[in-house]
Length: 317
Image (cartoon, rainbow, N blue to C red; front, side, top):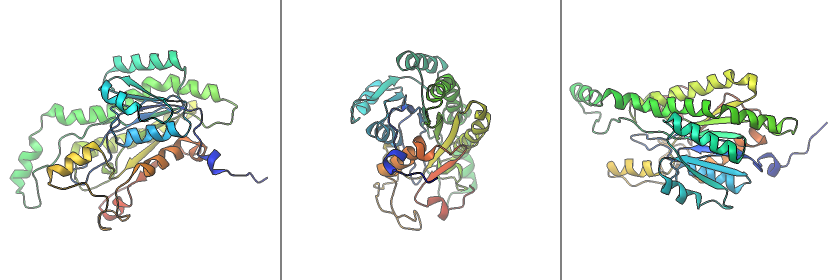
């Protein structure tokens, strides 16, 4: 029996509740700097919402029918400014630090009392960590050694604490609300609850443009999300990854400025085969695909959105 396919219905996120943590960036050229997002569709939150990937996702979901999009971050004024960019007034700012179990518990309780469930959690908060600024192909091995040795141990490990461990505890904090999202939709034909983590192509790149801590923490996050896909299968909670390449963001602009470069919209095919950076439509397409019926059959997947960047660099994925 054939089924009529309507693209509007297929990619609809009507009624979803989402949560997004972190609203920073994609990656720059040298170094790559990222943040990661947590979104819960039908009840959604976003953290540190600047005009980066997290905010782009929040706006895309809200503009296309999400009931609530909760955005989470440490800077309340920044979140409030971001929330005003919503089309229908359904982006809701919540102040909190994803590295604090107390803050995560408080936020979960707030959403539980206000809405009662979450459909989509997007883990998007993150930090860049120690980078390789100042090194070049002409640097001596001693200079390289000194640069790599210079960060405090806690600073290096702190990159993993935010990019990987905070993602883990954010997911754990929202498990019950994600399960309630499934219970609410049982028998309705709607897709199951889902976690999406914003990782990075830096986790697949065998070069080290952004530093060892950043790339390593993103590789760890990607692997962890695959494990969650298997671990949470008995409860019907899905786990997927978006791995962005170079997108416009506050971080990208700052990084290029350090190299006396202006952010470019066009790049040679040897750098990005699509010859441009990612934009709001690119990331909107990715999150709407995963969050809607169109992506309902995906679990344990990594969606790379980089314009072919990994295809022209040494990488493993």
